[in-house]
Amino acid sequence: MIELCAQEENEQSIRNFAAFVLLQGKLENKIQEYEQRLERQGDKHSATLLTYLYRAAGDLKKALLAAEVVGDEFLIEALLHERGDWKTLAERAEERAKVSG
Image (cartoon, rainbow, N blue to C red; front, side):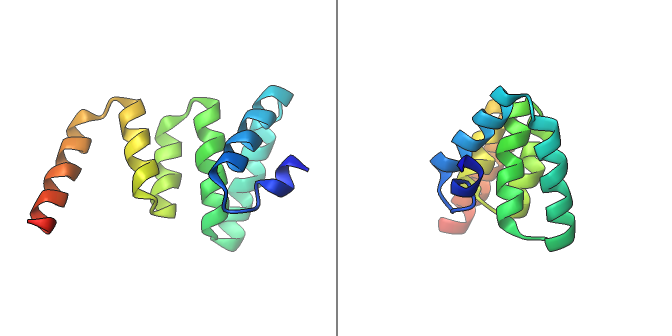
């Protein structure tokens, strides 16, 4: 049921799904499942789910790569912050300033 809710474009449902899978000890299985879905279907929703599953697994590098597939700027910057990648965050802020100014 929780996985069904995570199929919606609702961040809280996706977060809940990732936490549930982690607590059930099935994180690696779900990561593999959604990696395969992403390979087969190339859909952004699988990439979004993978972002949160990788994050729950503590793999922020892969989470960031998946978030980049999605193109969710807020999520990308949140992950950069979690990784402590201040240089990239500063570069992104400079780019935004150039574009808007």
